[in-house]
Image 1 (cartoon, one colour):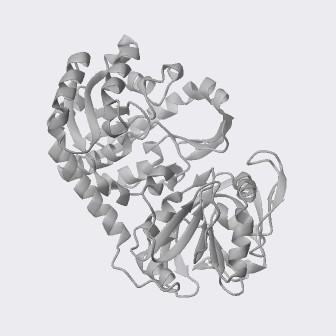
Image 2 (tube, rainbow, N blue to C red; image 1 turned 135 degrees about the horizontal axis):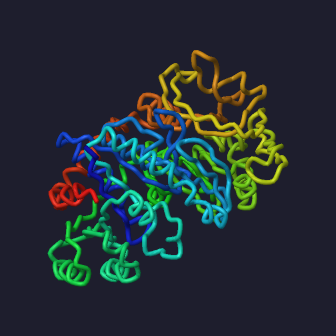
Image 3 (cartoon, helix red, strand yellow; image 1 turned 90 degrees about the horizontal axis):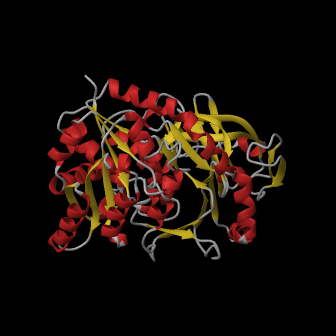
Length: 486
């Protein structure tokens, strides 16, 4: 029997589709259903390593966790990782496919539809229902030709659609009704219901709005979902989600420069949840403040982001921080920046060439076309505590400071440290999700050990999200729509 399937599309980006799919996945799996998440095409530099090799969007890895499944490359068969304002690295079924400019990808994306449908079919073999997430908005009709992310996929897979609107940003009635108006008949007839998301205050105040939308569209009203503040405890898909709210004014100050092509910034999420940490996200135009630790995050385009860092004068701030005896950590691309040089002889990131690093570690990096995507398990060299994470990176880093590795495995050392231990770098993402290691690391800056259990927090939040959706959505109606295999 073919598994049921339903696609959640939005009136725009960041309307909450990823969170809704995660919550529904946990809700349905608790009912005993075999559930799989699926996003045909995602655009994000926040990636995860799948259990079957390769990389997928971080949001799909979270949704897989919600469904109590190991993440698979088939859950996000096309991942676009922006490298510049006009181009991106293309990941297909977990593996690097190439780099294309936006215009070229637009002309060729339809070629990837067979791979997308293949992955979708693989997921349907072993599940009762597949929850499909769209990207952006189907109202972007200028992108409809060759579309594989929204209605183009829904048509090819012949599945029904539910449209999600974000009431918090305003104009939700116009967004939903306007989307119906602008779509061609074949696409709008595929939409069977709508969800109002992120409602603040009394839900009854929007009763007339729901009636107006239902009357103008003919779609089923599937629920009004109140604002779920605890979503901030889940790994973010967008750096703007992490940046929300003012930082704490007390505690150890950790400054993170916001690079244009920042990648895998969920590294910061466990630190943000610590009560003794003031995480300061430094925006372009601002100086890096006086702090205890500067953390250089991952980057999709290390050389370009290093040039941007210098343009902002952040290199001067970092070197001054070092002279004051401050500590610095670089993760992945940030680790590469800390070295003496970064060379790209084959133009993997763009134009071939090399740039000087910050010179804070005695290592050098050569970028190569081979990408390493692998889970990581080891210990910190100093304290011996276990750490776990993953690697997603291009390039090899070697040099004398590698003889003082930050981490160790059975195969040898990983990362590097300065002689005084105040500058550290590693290719491993997810380190701070290991609770004992994170507590020990922060204790070196005077932070009292907390009872924060990051992984437990994620699990508890997924369960509360499922409860939240159960209370406010018509789950039976959603299941009936999903069962209508066309």
